[in-house]
Image (cartoon, rainbow, N blue to C red; front, side, top):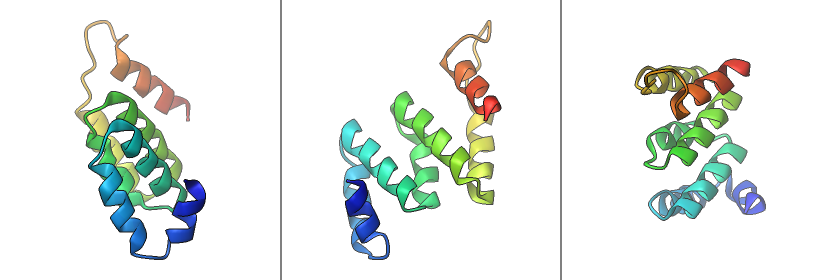
Length: 103
């Protein structure tokens, strides 16, 4: 899958594949995330920050941290501002924040 993404990286065909996968099930959305990450499609990464599945949102957050662009940094801040922290600070969002701080 990564080889396909790299082969299509300079072609509009990749956008069509990413559109199709982003609208599909969780497995295909995760593949789209991997392809976007490998081809430096920061806009696609930012778009996946609001995925309905927590796992994909977390993977996307880490991909945005690795991308380290002004746009991805801004999207990370917006995402974390909206993150529910919960009572004692032990929920999934707090764990995610803790892991991001370690990077």
